[in-house]
Length: 183
Image 1 (tube, rainbow, N blue to C red):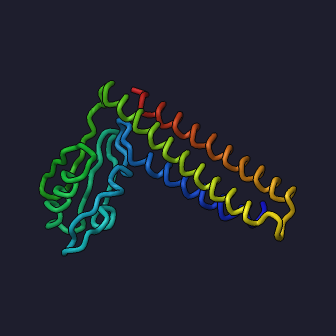
Image 2 (image 1 turned 135 degrees about the vertical axis):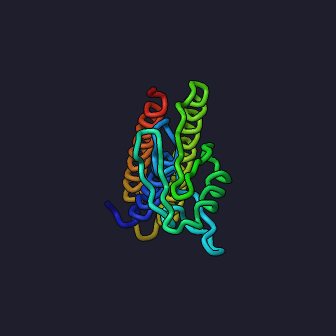
Image 3 (image 1 turned 60 degrees about the vertical axis):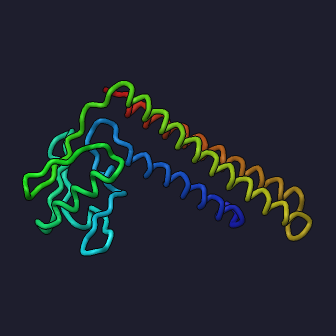
């Protein structure tokens, strides 16, 4: 690949990777520890990622268990989970916090499916914006160090790269939607 296109390939890869990590935080009926990735706990006055203040495990398919490394953090972790948007009420026995994931209703599955499609469309827009920026940068090079044919070849390569990422995003949308709709 031409080094002039490498920067756009890297940007498209980052946009795609962001979408995939975003999809991991969408719960699909099964307990997935990634739904807790964005939760921060007040740890001695510092917002700290939940993964850094306790052990997170999945003892059952529909349950996440959080064992804080310090007992006095149980309340703070509970508050952080309640303040988040995961929509699950934590229970604790004084030492461990449990999150029990209810079965998703058909209506909630459809809402999540729409959310998945919207995030996918946003990622496609980001990819297309990167392509546009790349085409603009290539046009500025025209007449200078690269011939018109060279610019055309680079634009074609950039379009092929864009098409590949759009196809990958469509596949990710399809896979995540199927995952959500599976009862």
